[in-house]
Length: 161
Image 1: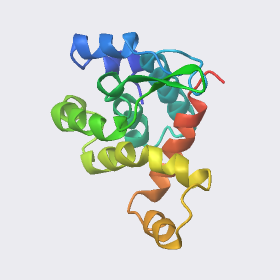
Image 2 (image 1 turned 180 degrees about the vertical axis):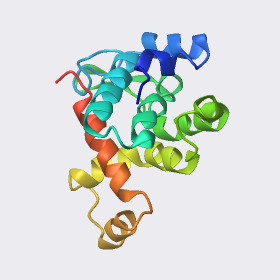
Image 3 (image 1 turned 135 degrees about the horizontal axis):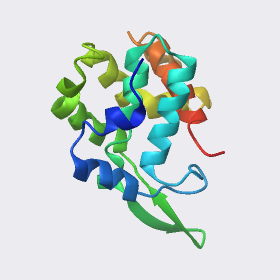
């Protein structure tokens, strides 16, 4: 892919991009800091390790766009944590709104949508937290299972750990 992260992310509205830069994440899981930095790191990893899969690379732009609106601070065990529960579902509306801005890169909106929708499920799957056989089999039979799992690795590696 001949595009940089900055070129692709800046196709989105400036206020949305700024909200990613301003949105901090819990340092336990994301020592790299902002959602913007994380998405850039995921993009760079995907570009290097999956250069042939445009949808995996493009998913790096979309997968966490819902984090600013789902950010919550909670106190647990005397520590303030930042959470973004449900961000993957909140991110889907941005695919619907802005996917056409990337028509020169991909026309497979369904694949990007499914990768983004299921990227947190993939982390649960990889960690063994999905234990019911039926749920495991359903997930493994997903049309885009391989791409979802590949993106999950990019998401994991795109952190400042």
